[in-house]
Length: 258
Image 1 (cartoon, rainbow, N blue to C red):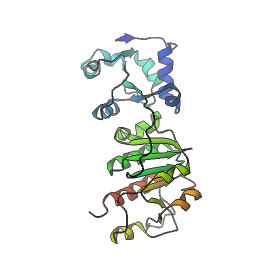
Image 2 (image 1 turned 30 degrees about the vertical axis):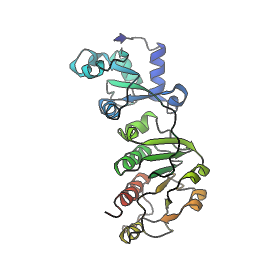
Image 3 (image 1 turned 90 degrees about the horizontal axis):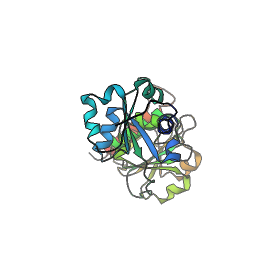
């Protein structure tokens, strides 16, 4: 174990960037996972950290033993220094630095979720969790969407990242490579989702497009859609939160034909 006490140490500066800057992983080729739950979720999916970082109060306890057994470099920071780089209100006192692999290629025929310029990290992470839970193997983020591997999205995703193929920075035209039907949601156009499901007309293998929180799905993607779908709202609300809409749509496709 290597104890570092200076906030000006180059490694500490790198950790701070990874923990606090949304796009740092793109520049540094690594991302930051903080907390026991996220780190264990990553390991269960075969992820191996490049470095373990422990708060000093944890380093000498039994809680550190699983992390020390990984045979990777271990850095120990005084608790106050760890809290200074933490992205959480209450620091988790341990974390991983993980090497960020090159983005995979778009897979044309797998169940897919498309994120169209979503801005809120909580929404993005929640949709990744839904995609993983309902068997959607791939998430495609169009240019302008919140950084998928930022610390905030990772926290909101709660480990879902590691069971999905994630591709970022795409243009609308890249979606032409998909061989599954493209579905979009609309507040006023198209058949109702529950009717499609009841009539057996909802495809199980498809690509659902989830649009910007305020503007919705862009016009060019609406024009590309094989189907525009409405979600019934008997209570009379004008619209749904995009993560809520995603959960409803993805669950409907996942259970189509069951």
